[in-house]
Image (cartoon, rainbow, N blue to C red; front, side, top):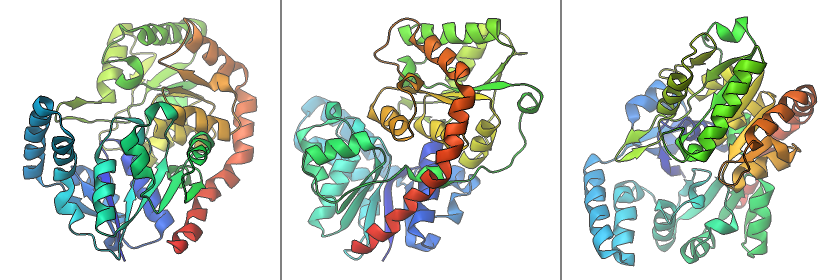
Length: 389
């Protein structure tokens, strides 16, 4: 029996890297029994993923066809063309899977977006008699579609990573549910060379994505909130700011590169003595976690950057737009002020939450230090549940 990860993609999103590595540890299998479908094998190899899973390269020809099918789908917009578009790039990988294998659908928040590859791959696999697991997921009522609900019933196990999703799925009567922390909580920090500011100064780590900003700009309303926050830190504290990218994807018409957002912020303030950017080009997820661990405070948009901060007991403010941020913070017993909804907020909310973070820094750190050892052990309980599959 082998485990297949069709939605791994690659470590251009360090969260994908984190999920793959932590899942390999939890599944306790050798790399040749864990196969991930990968769009950038060279990058994943550099990040050390080949020590955890076997990397199967995406068929580049299928990606070209995918773009063609996408164009056709925009014109015809039928259920059949949508199925072709979402399923075709994965067919080569899916055909490696037998009914003795198990498919692990990762991605965490993949069910929070439009109908996508998880639906089409899972439905295809079900028809082939292959068991599948929705792994470490989050999803709210606002994300539900009839197609997603139908697919959710097809999974042999649904591993939810926070209680808000778990409660919602229970209300839908979904079977085979479990509630455990995100797999990435189990990963250690990995020592690496860091910018001097992390040893010479108190530092606020800041991860910003275009998802929370509304685009690659500071001009949208939440961008103005970020400007107010950084201005306050520069004028009212002695702390430095380290911008910490976590996603570098910029391909196939999709730009999620946090480094561009960091450049925009750095250029706006033009204060290189107080604002620096962590170069993550050659840093893997656990090394970025090490950098985050050295921060006095952390503010994060990417969920797995926030998970790194929580796991290292750094007082953290999460910038969220979906159920995942609220659910994880709730399960950790953190005050609701420590999650800012970047899509629904009042002017000054971000700065208000940051001042709360500063005022309660010691209490928050001590609380995380108390609960984190036990919390990090909980994901290992998935091994017992897998035996039933």
